[in-house]
Length: 116
Length: 116
Image (tube, rainbow over all chains, first blue to last red; front, side, top):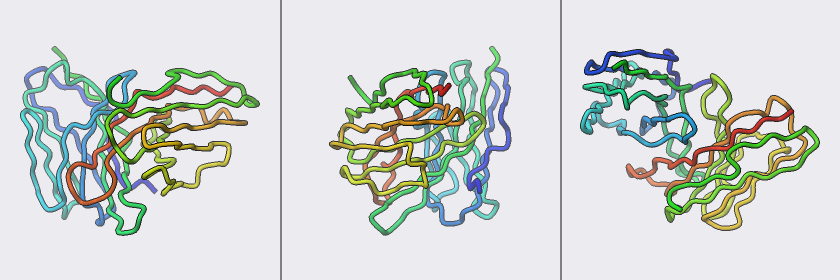
């Protein structure tokens, strides 16, 4: 059962416009959410995160919004640039008090293309 | 070398072969992970090592055998694989545990495995 879902496999946006990538989750025990960016032939790289006690986190052109009641988060990129073209993964963390520590769950990714 | 490195980057093997994937992290982290990424599926966590001890094994078939000789190195030994095991295998590292914001994982570029 997939606990983190990215229902849009792809998205195309004009350069300079806003890109909005969406992610839905089912587990209310997730305490931390992350976005990763992946270029071809490279591993995912951490982009931005948000704690479950917040509803917004901003870092330059990137803003992540969290709606806990809807179990939904989104990543906004403003303005979008051609270099932002990549696959974006949403991830969520559960915290365990046992020695097993944190567990991360990933979505299937959304491929963003920013058109010059 | 910096970050997380993986070798080989590409591997083609027959179902009767035995091979190993290698991962090395140069970030001073104390936890390492193996993930499998199949087409159109989310990243699947396979194994987690914390302080060189395996702490998570997500029901992975025994034809995959991990080894963590120290906190910087992680291996995935492969034997008698099936064609459906063809995927991108990603290694990651992180600091272990806690609720702090510094538990994002740093990924290597992955090994593209093809099983014939």
